Length: 327
Length: 295
Image 1 (cartoon, helix red, strand yellow):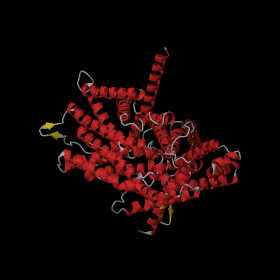
Image 2: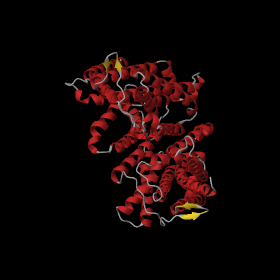
Image 3: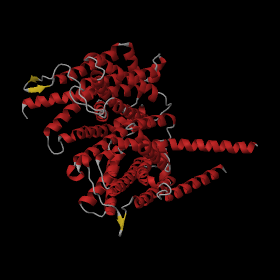
Image 4: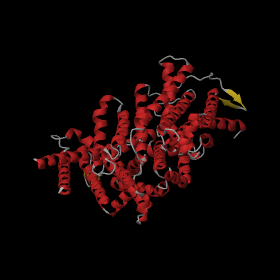
């Protein structure tokens, strides 16, 4: 009974989310926040990948901004410098980033825990140095501007209103695909890996292969998000993909709950709203607040804020229902 | 390459290597006692540098008291970090602890950037700017201070760990926390001491580095990474090995930039250390995984 109620509640929540998302960009609803919502959609895509990687394989990535940046820069360079169709550029960027993740996956997953974290941090920084130093391609520290918009036939995504629907179509597709992966054999294998690698291996799960698969998937998500980011802003620069960017992505994943796909929207949303709407009024204190969030969430709710809130909500409902029965 | 140039690059490498060694010492001490990699280790160097600048220029303290107070504050921040962030979570996973130390690192960095300064700062040299001529090379006297400080710190640490009761307790705790707690060594107090020691050594690195190279509030990431490389070359086992790791990295970096060939230009200086990091990690990966399982 409880399980059925729980699932009907979550369907209701998801339906409400869909309606809110469709209505959001109209000016009589949340129109003034369209740009913010676009960024939330883009960062949700990256966060989902990171949630899968961190939550389901128990591996931390402190260099996710590297994949994000690769998607952005490859799309920008191909479509601006070489005149490639933006959609094709986006596809090539995703394939190249995925291939890169595949190549580094096997050697890097020979590491675990602390060392893996350090290695991903190193990779992220190397990629950032390349973005800054490969001036002839990337425009150096100033980056690139005037990147073309995406378009379908004559329909150009040249307004925030149009790009909003584009970004959220991608975002929801990514969320649904991820949800299906979690509920498939792959998802169960990943959870087994998280609980115990040795046990997973003993029942015939190829641990390394699954980890690399998830790394590739998260890299492709990050790359798509990076492409959407440059086709939204039409500029790109290395600051967007520095070490703090990787840390912010981890903050989003941590707030969203490391093992929850829909929590990613919550994590990305809360973090972007916090930095774009609230913290701006307090100058540059955002970094301090991010630091505090990371420490506090990890001390008090290591499974993530979203998961904790869900738990609290369920406990409250249970208590409410019990009271009804007692009467 | 002339012999004068050769000496010049060796000295430059040993100087920056000494700083990496000091950071690496901090990593090694904390890891040995607590099995935690403290991602905030580089921040203590930054703290040492920026605190000494603030104390000298804003508070008007003379050089020596400013340096001592800076190191003491850095050590105190190390203690606070341990007590508030590392100790409270019960049965925290490796990933949670990594995220906690990163959170602490960016918290420290953010507060310093807001409250002290966001500019690159340099403090006055300890003994003048007049460079010393040595075998045809010109050496900044501050470089000698850095190298000397590193040597002295390493010797004191060695004596402390091997000839004092507290030092021996730390070593015992590093070897086996359960067994050592049975003979009256409290692992939590040892962990606190490890954090204070690591923070103080980092702070010392910062105060001697600041007169030679301008540092800013976000210098901690790179310094931390390079210190980690130093400690990783040393295998996180002995402080002396971490020192050699630091010196090796410094010299490799110095000569790679000096070669000025292909990718080895000064813009890529930090990338070289990162490549060394990845190489070391991958070479040692089998051994590191074993240790992680055992620890």
